[in-house]
Image (cartoon, rainbow, N blue to C red; front, side, top):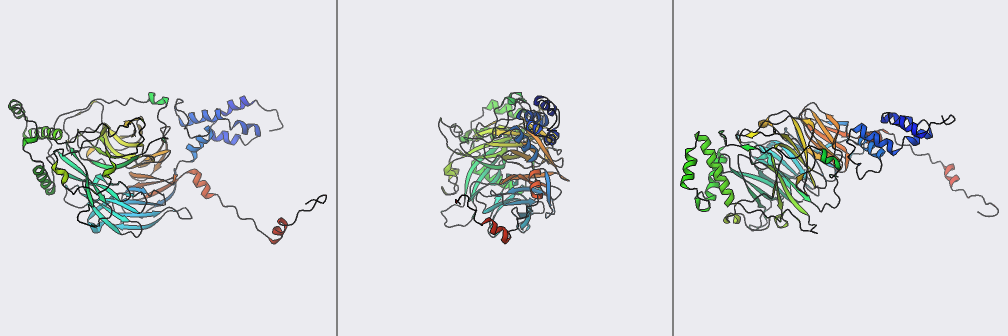
Length: 601
């Protein structure tokens, strides 16, 4: 075609604009002119917006060098090709966690084992290197695991077998040097999960019931090595004690080490923000209901002990006037509602007088203050037992060790409970959370409540949507920054709703779903890029921190699937070039002296 009359570049460009991207790439091989036009930036900008259906007000990713490379990144670098299926588990696989180096990952399952896997084999396959069963410790199943910061210890959280209504769990710490069990820590309720604060200390929970719907959650700091060097050295220390109302409890604790955020890894403030759905929600109203809750004998004893410790004399409580008290007593419709309303009034009064006042300077930073902060994040609630709020509590540097006052000294103070530093209401049932690699952004999976719903009974939350919303919260401004994404679904009702783990890499966010798929979104463009198929519910996904083009997914179908990007699959399938034969003659030829010209070498 180089010998014939050439079409004007502008006309070739107009033709290419009407072709799909793969046809444009093929046409670019026809001649030099078409090759040059097929690399035009304006062409790939138009192809990019039309193919991915992104609003044109959304700018190109700031780290991208060209529209063509950005198109190729989203098309070729998504881990969506299944390359291996791991079938060593014999029951539902609930959670996956990578080491910080990415050389290992762990998996937890209903078969009550935690397994360790190697990802650095020369042939690229993944193999199991260790398996530990926790049944010998009376566990029902393992549900969560996490590597410490230097990848020397593994935290494993599980459900402890007890009475039918028991919510007890346990956390085990395993050495990754010789796979020995170093310590076991009580964890209640079990869906606190637990987490590492630093290389040597972990956070667990305990729950004490004060009434039918009032409780307090105690968060403990534990040394990973439970060796007692001296009776004056603590291996465990109370971190926070927080009051819960309306049958809610603290669950799903996470630690975010928020740095100075000089260069955030996500661009938020683009013009499309204004076109997203408003973040305001209808106010929620509630009345106290009549549903009784059952507790085991252990919880009843804890309630009685807690009430004796706090002293239910009214010495520290505001006194109700006789007329007010008479009104409260006479306005009853049933004995159960009377008990619940009195309990809630008492709980709020007790919280008002026995809770430390929040420090307004804890979360705010002075001008020029570039201090790193450590936040404890968890799910909680104030309207119903279902987790619908994210609680934030800052951990100060002096709280990051178990050394300090002897246990129990804090009980002598009148300020008995710790106040939350900040609360973010999600207006729905929270079923998953994940932190971005820089710990600036918190991604939250939730199932929304109906707009304007009325909560008449804390034990009967509003119906939840089948669609799962994915929210983005900026931990620097402590507010929601992105519109919700609804590309995945769940079907179980409130009382059967379970946790679905999500994960975040530099460019992508992934989540499981009850519709038998995992999903991958681009963090910058807010678009769904891939669906990963399983035969049952997908409970957990995990990106390799060393390579975001490697993703794992775990399912109720008892398998772990390994996904790689088309680019990585193509590179793995490309045969290596054979080395050139080095004969003696060729070696002599290369080392032969160059002949002289005009007497010069």
